[in-house]
Amino acid sequence: MIDIYNEKLAKFADGERRIFTATFLRPDDRQGIFKDLTVDNVDNEVVKQIALRMTKAFKELNLQKGDVIQFEAIVKKNKRGEYTVERPTHAEKISSAETEEDSGVHTVGDDWDWFEK
Image (cartoon, rainbow, N blue to C red; front, side, top):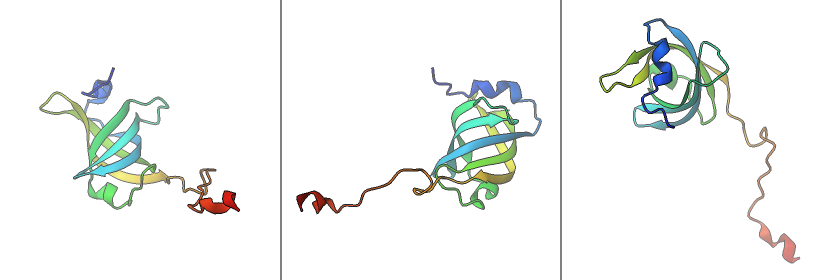
């Protein structure tokens, strides 16, 4: 079942600033799509995928797909009844996306004539 209202965030909607960790997927208009959002360094994911406003704190990180970031924010319930993470500050990149060399995957070029020789 998909949690479209992010109801797992409800227990954190007390106005307290918390530390969040998430993996950047892609930009989308003025928002960024993040996955695997966790709260207060708890290992289990709270939200599988969430859109967050691309604030100055996020833009300064020059995020690439796969970058893991940590930031402080609060959880609020919006007018549509969805729980959302707002006012992110103190954002920092805690791990960069793997490059092709780091991933252990070798990409073969388009020189496919090697088997004809």
